[in-house]
Amino acid sequence: TMQRKIDLIISASWVIPIIPANTVLEAYAIAIHNGYIVDLLPLATVKERYTSQQTIHYENQVLMPGLVNAHTHSPMHLFRGLADDKNLQEWLESFIWPAEKALIQEESVYLGSLLAMAEMLRLGTTCFNDHYLFPQATLRAVKQAGMRACLGLQMMDVPTAWANNAMEALEKGLYLYKKEKQQERITWMWAPHAPYTTSDATWLELIKANTILKLPIHLHLHETQQEIVDSLALYKKRPIERLQRLGVLDSAPLLAVHMTQCTETDAMLLQNTHHHVIHCPESNLKLGSSIAPIELLQRYQVNIALGTDGAASNNDLDLLGEMRSAALLAKGITQDPTVL
Image 1 (cartoon, rainbow, N blue to C red):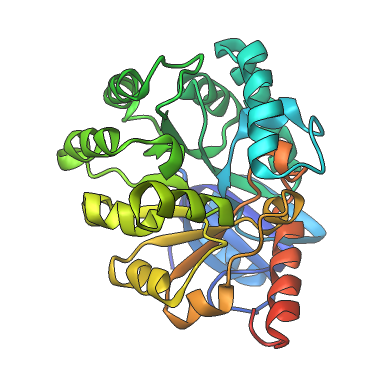
Image 2 (cartoon, rainbow, N blue to C red):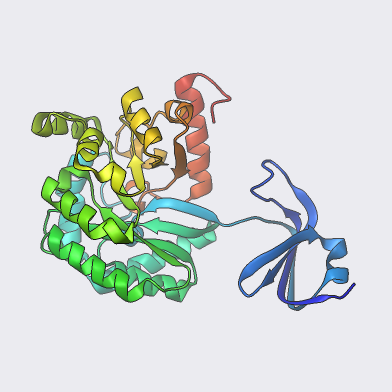
């Protein structure tokens, strides 16, 4: 048979694929051409099938797909350790928001993003879903680092260094997306901060702007008990019910981050509308926000992904550590070691 000429062969003592699950392949290689993995094969058979411009072998090491951090605020790496032992409201209002006011502008976001990527890459993360101000600065850092990222077009009804109000943020986001949407390795989402910082009017404008684009919506949802209490007082509805009434749930795929407060009804809403929950157990633990009921969400077949949140509320970006925490917490809370 003819050998096929390709760009790169990477082999290792062990390869761990995603599918089939819980499989370790010994002495395997992956073949890469034009930026794509074109084959996964035993090391012994590589020479008959391929010649490559470059060959790399990792002896006594594991080769596996890169981890995906489904929710983070990479520039907040600058605030690691700034405020511990505080609840979410105090942490945000007394520490994080004032620090952002003092420090956050395009250049600091760029530097913070680079720092976060150095930590993520060191710990096996090759792709992250980011939610922060000045996404154009994180974009510049991502291009430089060579990672993959989904960048959030952030908005809230609170003045920030990025925009004076939600409408300005929406316009800036639209402009940035239209200008940069062709980037390699980079995708985009809307990133309204949370239901309690986004007015009904803003949600309706976002739905309208997103009618044709259909970008997913990445937001903090049901993070704390207080968020539910406040929403019931203001709107007579739980935040997710309010979003349903406004048409948000039917407008685009939702990446609902945290969901520590989740009833059967909430889970059913998520299931019926095919949305995703991003589980950030260590951030929820640090801020004392409670823990998402993974067993309930799994029962309703809601897709769950894992995130570290920002380094300011974790305080690291270690996804393997996050996996361990998620598994142990689920087992402990449900008293069922098989649950996760």
